[in-house]
Every structure is written in structure tokens, then in C-alpha cells.
Image (cartoon, rainbow, N blue to C red; front, side, top):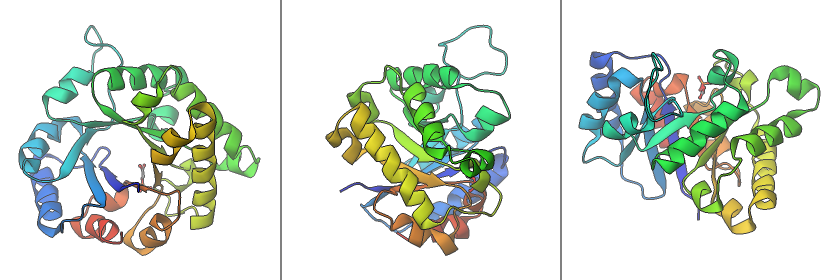
Length: 250
Ligand code: PGA
């Protein structure tokens, strides 16, 4: 059976003091449950502090982005080995804010995916359609294109260390959530596509998270869908009670 994986994407929120408060709040309220995994993805400046606080907990640490080169003249960028050196196990790649605000294309995201996997980091690879694309009826072809390009040259074995997050762009930070049926439909489409590109076994064990305005009020119904294996949470991961509410709805 697939585990449920709940990840918090802090985005550009929380300084060191606030990081300590948030992580302490999550740790204090978390009850043991072997059927789920919890991950936090603070900003780069908080990773080292977060890692120190997360030692001896079962909470995993992730970053929100990285560069595809090992090192070099890339002002403002962070490498996979740097993330590993501060204790990261995960890295979010291809988030719609990276794609749409910072202009990251599928080819660049694919290079990052390969670098992360070859460096021993587990990517949380995000895909999702805009409102216009959904209304045009092109959701599936957009998702298929993002997945085929983003996973180019990635082996079935490497995919075992990859999480896919389906995040409809129109549901991110807007308060509009995809209905459980709408989300399930796309998750099922993704799993079928992965079976087609790879094989049934790889598709059957792949963790596919839903993201986009997940909150304690809607998490239980979303997470009960057969192909939804967890959530990538933005706004609601910034307060311990809300994030714990989502985690405990499993
Ligand atoms: P949201 O963000 O939960 O605030 O919609 C989700 C995300 O961007 O990963």
C-alpha cells in the first residue's frame, strides 16, 4: 500500500525565529503514524536551523528549488550538494511559481530533475494546468507534455525516488480547490500515463500528491481518493494547527 505523504511548501515565509516556532509547533502536535510521511520545505536560509530541530523526528526536510549545475558562476543559485550538506532529502522542482513567475521551461526542469536524482535528492515534481487551459479542455495534454518532458531520460528505478505533485495553477493560493472528483480524474490520468511510459508496477507505487488550497476542511475528502497519495500544502502549512489538521485527517 502506498503511504500518504504530506509536504509543506513554506514559499518565501518565515525567518529563523519563526522557523523555530513553526517547527516546534508541528513536532509537538505530531502523533506517530507509520502510514504517512511528513516533509517541510522552508526557505534556503532556514534549512540548517530546521534540520537541527528535526533531528530525531520522522519529519523530512526539503528545499524549494535548486540549480542543475554542480557549482559555478550562477549568482543567487544553490546546488544539489549544498542542499544535501544542510540535511535536505527532498527538493520541490517545477513548481508553477517557478514556471510562471521565473520562466522555468520543461527542459530546465528536466535538467534539475536529473541532477537531483543523480545526487541522491528526491524531487517533488510539480505539474498543473492554468484556468485557461482547463477551460479550453487541454488539461490532460498539458499535464502529459509536462510529464513527458520533465521525466525525459529518468529511469523507472529513479522514478521510485520521485514524488509527482498535481497542482492546478488556478487552485494555488486562490482558495479555489479542485473537487475531489476533478483531482482524482487527473491523478488517475497521471498514473495511467506513467504505466504507459514505464510499467504498471512503477505506476502503482508512485506517490502522487494533490496541491492547491488544501486545508483541514477539505483534506480528508481529497486524501480519501484512490489515486491521491498526499498533499503539497502552501498557505495552510504556515500555522501548526492547520498543517497538523491536514496531517491528522489521514
Ligand atoms: P496553496 O499552495 O496551498 O497555498 O494553494 C500550494 C502550493 O503552491 O504548493
